[in-house]
Amino acid sequence: MADRPVPVKDLRLLDVKLGQLPTWLASGDYSPGGIYRAYKRGTGRFYTKYFDVKKGGIGGLAMILTGYVVISYIWSYDHISK
Image (cartoon, rainbow, N blue to C red; front, top):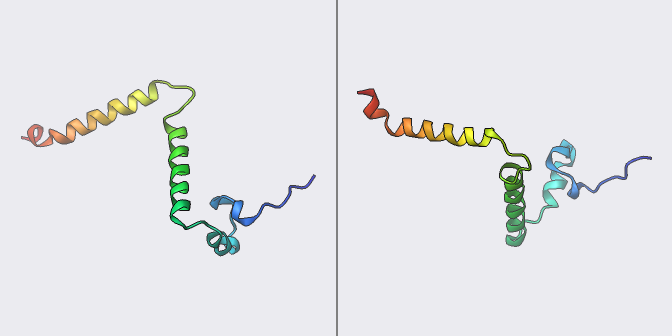
């Protein structure tokens, strides 16, 4: 069976061809409510991808610890370099 065609406004940005880009941009909801909904949708996806993971491991803890070490080094660089 052939896939049914999807309207341009329902495509993701990566799936839009260059010739369809002006149509895709014009079909967006640029009202304050639309911008707010897009912002909430983006933060929800970000939270789901990076914070609401199903399998946790040592990687997240290692990143936090590495960040703490780097920031501590930057803060005390003047004292260490003398």
